[in-house]
Length: 172
Image (cartoon, rainbow, N blue to C red; front, side, top):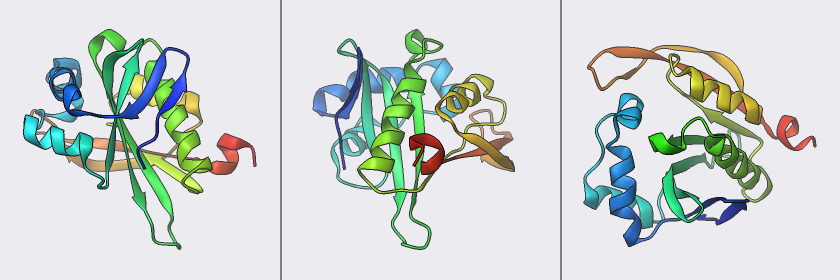
Protein backbone atom coordinates (compact mmCIF):
# COMPACT_ATOMS: atom_id res chain seq x y z
CA UNK A 1 0.00 0.00 0.00
CA UNK A 2 2.96 2.34 0.52
CA UNK A 3 5.04 2.09 -2.63
CA UNK A 4 8.35 3.67 -3.50
CA UNK A 5 8.09 5.16 -7.00
CA UNK A 6 10.99 6.81 -8.81
CA UNK A 7 11.19 9.03 -11.91
CA UNK A 8 14.67 10.55 -12.16
CA UNK A 9 15.25 12.88 -9.23
CA UNK A 10 11.57 12.70 -8.14
CA UNK A 11 10.66 9.96 -5.67
CA UNK A 12 7.31 9.17 -4.07
CA UNK A 13 7.94 7.08 -0.97
CA UNK A 14 6.59 5.97 2.38
CA UNK A 15 7.07 8.46 5.17
CA UNK A 16 9.03 7.96 8.37
CA UNK A 17 9.31 9.77 11.68
CA UNK A 18 12.03 12.10 10.37
CA UNK A 19 9.62 13.46 7.74
CA UNK A 20 7.21 15.03 10.22
CA UNK A 21 9.03 18.36 10.69
CA UNK A 22 9.93 19.00 7.02
CA UNK A 23 6.48 18.01 5.78
CA UNK A 24 4.82 20.08 8.49
CA UNK A 25 6.94 23.07 7.42
CA UNK A 26 5.69 22.59 3.84
CA UNK A 27 2.08 22.32 4.99
CA UNK A 28 2.59 25.62 6.87
CA UNK A 29 3.68 27.61 3.80
CA UNK A 30 1.07 30.15 2.57
CA UNK A 31 1.15 28.70 -0.96
CA UNK A 32 -0.04 25.40 0.57
CA UNK A 33 -2.38 26.69 3.29
CA UNK A 34 -4.21 28.77 0.65
CA UNK A 35 -5.52 25.49 -0.75
CA UNK A 36 -5.18 22.99 2.12
CA UNK A 37 -6.01 25.13 5.15
CA UNK A 38 -4.25 25.00 8.49
CA UNK A 39 -1.70 22.20 8.89
CA UNK A 40 -2.45 19.26 11.16
CA UNK A 41 -0.72 18.75 14.49
CA UNK A 42 2.65 16.99 14.39
CA UNK A 43 1.03 14.00 16.13
CA UNK A 44 -1.67 13.73 13.48
CA UNK A 45 0.86 14.10 10.66
CA UNK A 46 3.08 11.43 12.26
CA UNK A 47 0.13 9.04 12.33
CA UNK A 48 -0.84 9.90 8.74
CA UNK A 49 2.70 9.25 7.51
CA UNK A 50 3.14 5.91 9.29
CA UNK A 51 -0.29 4.32 9.76
CA UNK A 52 -1.62 1.68 7.38
CA UNK A 53 -4.90 3.49 6.94
CA UNK A 54 -6.91 5.08 4.15
CA UNK A 55 -5.99 7.65 2.91
CA UNK A 56 -2.37 6.67 2.36
CA UNK A 57 0.00 9.64 2.67
CA UNK A 58 3.35 9.42 0.87
CA UNK A 59 6.28 11.86 0.78
CA UNK A 60 7.49 13.46 -2.45
CA UNK A 61 11.27 13.93 -2.56
CA UNK A 62 13.29 15.83 -5.14
CA UNK A 63 16.97 14.88 -5.02
CA UNK A 64 16.46 13.48 -1.49
CA UNK A 65 14.81 16.70 -0.20
CA UNK A 66 11.20 16.63 1.02
CA UNK A 67 9.17 18.57 -1.55
CA UNK A 68 5.62 17.74 -0.49
CA UNK A 69 3.14 14.95 -0.05
CA UNK A 70 0.73 12.95 -2.16
CA UNK A 71 -2.05 10.77 -0.87
CA UNK A 72 -4.55 8.34 -2.26
CA UNK A 73 -7.79 6.89 -1.02
CA UNK A 74 -9.47 3.76 -2.37
CA UNK A 75 -13.08 2.71 -2.79
CA UNK A 76 -12.90 -1.07 -2.51
CA UNK A 77 -16.55 -1.77 -3.40
CA UNK A 78 -16.25 -3.97 -6.53
CA UNK A 79 -19.05 -2.01 -8.22
CA UNK A 80 -17.25 1.32 -7.78
CA UNK A 81 -13.61 0.27 -7.41
CA UNK A 82 -11.60 3.44 -7.92
CA UNK A 83 -9.17 5.75 -6.17
CA UNK A 84 -8.72 9.45 -5.55
CA UNK A 85 -5.53 11.48 -5.30
CA UNK A 86 -4.54 14.68 -3.46
CA UNK A 87 -1.19 16.43 -3.56
CA UNK A 88 0.66 19.40 -2.05
CA UNK A 89 4.07 20.82 -2.88
CA UNK A 90 6.28 23.34 -1.14
CA UNK A 91 6.68 26.70 -2.89
CA UNK A 92 10.24 25.91 -4.04
CA UNK A 93 8.95 22.91 -6.01
CA UNK A 94 5.82 24.40 -7.54
CA UNK A 95 5.76 25.14 -11.26
CA UNK A 96 8.67 22.77 -12.01
CA UNK A 97 6.76 19.69 -13.19
CA UNK A 98 7.31 17.84 -9.91
CA UNK A 99 3.60 17.56 -9.16
CA UNK A 100 2.80 16.31 -12.65
CA UNK A 101 5.45 13.61 -12.36
CA UNK A 102 4.35 12.56 -8.88
CA UNK A 103 0.68 12.32 -9.92
CA UNK A 104 1.64 10.32 -13.03
CA UNK A 105 3.75 7.89 -10.98
CA UNK A 106 0.99 7.38 -8.44
CA UNK A 107 -1.62 6.99 -11.19
CA UNK A 108 0.49 4.28 -12.86
CA UNK A 109 0.79 2.46 -9.51
CA UNK A 110 -2.95 2.71 -8.78
CA UNK A 111 -3.87 1.36 -12.21
CA UNK A 112 -1.18 -1.30 -12.65
CA UNK A 113 -0.61 -2.50 -9.07
CA UNK A 114 -3.87 -1.74 -7.27
CA UNK A 115 -6.18 -2.64 -10.17
CA UNK A 116 -8.27 0.51 -10.38
CA UNK A 117 -10.08 1.47 -13.57
CA UNK A 118 -10.71 5.14 -12.70
CA UNK A 119 -9.01 7.84 -10.65
CA UNK A 120 -10.40 11.17 -9.49
CA UNK A 121 -8.81 14.38 -8.31
CA UNK A 122 -10.70 17.46 -7.10
CA UNK A 123 -8.74 20.70 -7.08
CA UNK A 124 -10.31 24.00 -6.15
CA UNK A 125 -11.88 25.37 -9.33
CA UNK A 126 -9.75 28.51 -8.95
CA UNK A 127 -6.46 26.56 -8.73
CA UNK A 128 -5.52 26.92 -12.41
CA UNK A 129 -1.93 25.69 -11.96
CA UNK A 130 -3.08 22.43 -10.37
CA UNK A 131 -5.74 21.90 -13.04
CA UNK A 132 -3.13 22.36 -15.82
CA UNK A 133 -0.81 19.89 -14.09
CA UNK A 134 -3.48 17.21 -13.76
CA UNK A 135 -4.56 17.69 -17.38
CA UNK A 136 -0.96 16.96 -18.45
CA UNK A 137 -1.31 13.54 -16.78
CA UNK A 138 -4.58 12.98 -18.67
CA UNK A 139 -7.22 13.95 -16.13
CA UNK A 140 -10.32 15.44 -17.73
CA UNK A 141 -12.86 17.82 -16.20
CA UNK A 142 -16.10 16.11 -15.17
CA UNK A 143 -17.88 19.09 -13.67
CA UNK A 144 -17.96 21.85 -11.11
CA UNK A 145 -18.92 20.91 -7.58
CA UNK A 146 -20.55 24.10 -6.32
CA UNK A 147 -19.62 25.31 -2.84
CA UNK A 148 -17.58 22.14 -2.47
CA UNK A 149 -15.18 23.09 0.28
CA UNK A 150 -14.74 25.65 3.00
CA UNK A 151 -11.61 27.64 2.22
CA UNK A 152 -9.14 28.81 4.87
CA UNK A 153 -10.76 32.24 4.59
CA UNK A 154 -14.11 30.79 5.73
CA UNK A 155 -15.72 31.14 2.29
CA UNK A 156 -17.22 28.19 0.45
CA UNK A 157 -15.50 27.65 -2.88
CA UNK A 158 -16.16 25.52 -5.91
CA UNK A 159 -14.19 22.41 -6.75
CA UNK A 160 -13.48 20.86 -10.13
CA UNK A 161 -14.00 17.12 -10.30
CA UNK A 162 -11.56 15.54 -12.76
CA UNK A 163 -11.15 11.89 -13.66
CA UNK A 164 -8.72 9.65 -15.49
CA UNK A 165 -9.60 6.24 -16.90
CA UNK A 166 -7.13 3.38 -17.01
CA UNK A 167 -7.65 3.02 -20.76
CA UNK A 168 -6.82 6.68 -21.33
CA UNK A 169 -3.68 6.54 -19.22
CA UNK A 170 -2.21 3.13 -20.02
CA UNK A 171 -3.71 2.81 -23.48
CA UNK A 172 -5.22 -0.58 -22.65
